[in-house]
Each structure stands twice: as C-alpha cells, then as structure tokens.
Image (spheres, rainbow, N blue to C red):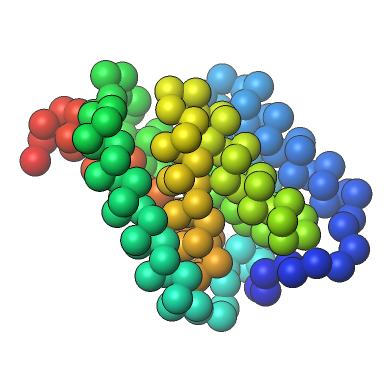
Length: 169
C-alpha cells in the first residue's frame, strides 16, 4: 500500500471514512470498536504497508517518548482504567484503522494529517493537546511501518498506562 500524496478524492471513500468515525463514536464501547473492525475485512491486505520508511519510525519514537514524558510529568496515570482487552487490543486496532489507515489512503496529504492528528486529539477530551501529540507519533509510525506498526505503538502505549495506573510493574 502506498501513502496517498494527492490526486482525486473519492466521495465514496470519504463517506466510508466519515461513517467509520461516526459508528465508532456513536456506538457504545466496546461495540463501536467491533463494528469498525468489521469494516477492516473489506480492506484486507491494503492495510499492510510494504514500503518501510525508517526515518518516520525514528521520528515517531522521538515524538512518542517526548509526549509520554510530558504526559507522565503533567498529568500522570489515568484514574479510569478500561478493561485491558478493550484498551490494548480493540482500541488500537479500531482507532488506527479510522485515524490512520483510512485517512492516509483516502484524503490528500494536508487533510489526512489534520484528521489523523487534530481530530484524534479532539476525540480524547481528557487532554486533547497531548492526545494530538500521541496522534502525531502514531501517524509518523503509520507512515514508517503501516497499520501494524501504528497498532503496535498504540497498544504499547495503552498497556504502559494501564501498568502505571494499576502499579503492576
């Protein structure tokens, strides 16, 4: 799969992106994640990135590390801890599909980055700025290694926060 750097925008694909976002938000958790994940069947192999870009992976690691340290220092561990299977499995798979895979294959470059970073941040109301920075790290990881790489970073982040919140380390 290649990153969409421009070209014609398909109204059908945009409708799919908006529908996935609305379904994920409007359907109660964890069912919203399950509903969105059922759409990944349609995408199949197109979710796997075949052209690694190490410079994006390095940038993602730097942004992620900085954001994590800021989050730890300024906010700290969360008080609400969702079930691990929801936070570490379903949320990363569904959110990376909606906020990375769909926008980066559907929208032109500036819009895909805005969607993947800003909209992702706005939908994490506890701290939209830090969530946007995490969204930037996840977007860079997606550009560097594809869907699986951004899912792995997202799952790692959520698992780490659960461990810190439960003091299970």
